Each structure stands twice: as structure tokens, then as C-alpha cells.
Image 1 (cartoon, rainbow, N blue to C red):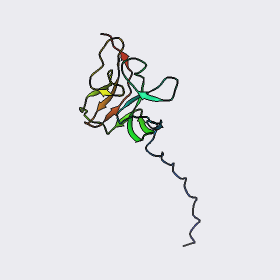
Image 2 (tube, one colour):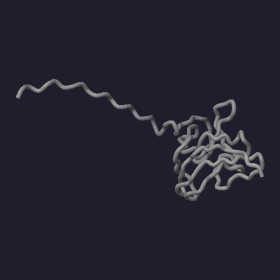
Image 3 (cartoon, rainbow, N blue to C red):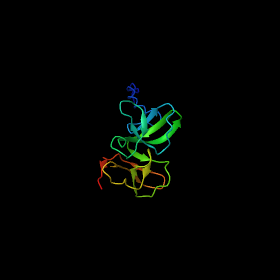
Image 4 (cartoon, rainbow, N blue to C red):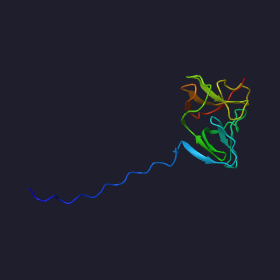
Length: 144
């Protein structure tokens, strides 16, 4: 046998993964003194980049952008805009959860009362007592 041939070039390096646990549906948000908890449903304040708890009591307050999946610290939280969320409690597997008309930021198994102002906004389908799939569906105003 003859001598061994030269070694070929090294292949390309693979891409680096995202920092932390963020992707297009999981975003770390910095907002000083946010006060949010896991499971809070949020909207963006008009004319600002401030997040507030969403509520189904009118069309403006019901413009949901996501749900809090983790609280990093007093000034940072993780917002899920779509997908599976864990760390919740008191859910019923297979039930649909709506944005609450009565309490800002809350999910409820009770669809808001139809009165021409409240918004019916289904947001989560539970797959266990502590988790579910967050799906930001189109809300609509229901009339009695």
C-alpha cells in the first residue's frame, strides 16, 4: 500500500442554540417592578411597551399578547405567546379556560357573561391539573 492521502477540510460548525429558554414564543421581558405571577394573562398598554394584566371586561383590555410562564425576578418575567405552559394549579383536564371578566390577569373555566361589552376570549385548554396549551384565539363580544 501507498501512503495515506491528505486529510479533508473540517466541516462547518452547527448553529448555537438560543440563550436561556427563549424562542419566538417564549420571551424574557424586563419591566421594573412588574408584579406578575405565573399564569397571569397579559396585554400591552396602548402607546407604550408596558405589559398589564388583560381582562375580558371590554375590547381594549382583552387584547391578550401572552401568559406569564416564569418569574425570573422582580424586574424580569418570561412571556409565552403560544404553546404549552406548566406550573399552573387547579385546572380540570380537557377544560377550556377563558380570560376573566371579573379579575384582571386571571383564567377562568366560566365564559364571560354576554352583555354587549364583555369579551369571550378562550385562551387555554388544560391537559392536566397544572398545565395546558395556550392558544390566543380571537375574542368576540357576546350579546345577551
